[in-house]
Length: 156
Picture 1: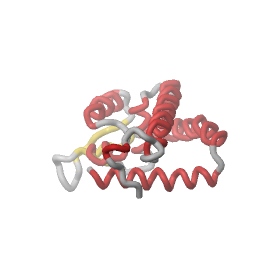
Picture 2: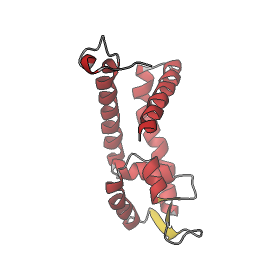
Picture 3: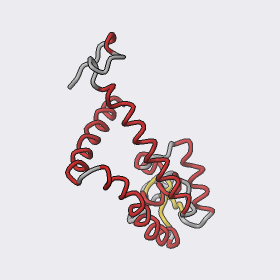
């Protein structure tokens, strides 16, 4: 583990995390931009696609769980859910264990959409990864990204 000191915050040689920050942010933004662009070709916003894919193959989940599992911010999630419900792709029902909690699940039409758009999105995005990384590099990258994610989660 590297310790950052106040006087090293602008020198990548003294603070190696600076070598990673910008490329990580650029890769993330490029991924989101391309993913959203392709989702829009399928008639969904990036947030709508994220919710559909997160709910796919589940019995549904409450809004809190959905906000934790998607990249959609809590402030945006309500609008995304409203639009998906108007499209007939999701439905919300009170939880049998707590009537104050609404369980969101895909409708039959939403499930059909999930079965079509998820594989299509993977087929579209895979070449970006495959031309840049070997399988071994992807496995290593996954481990490193999970370590980094978990480090940030410890702080919140």
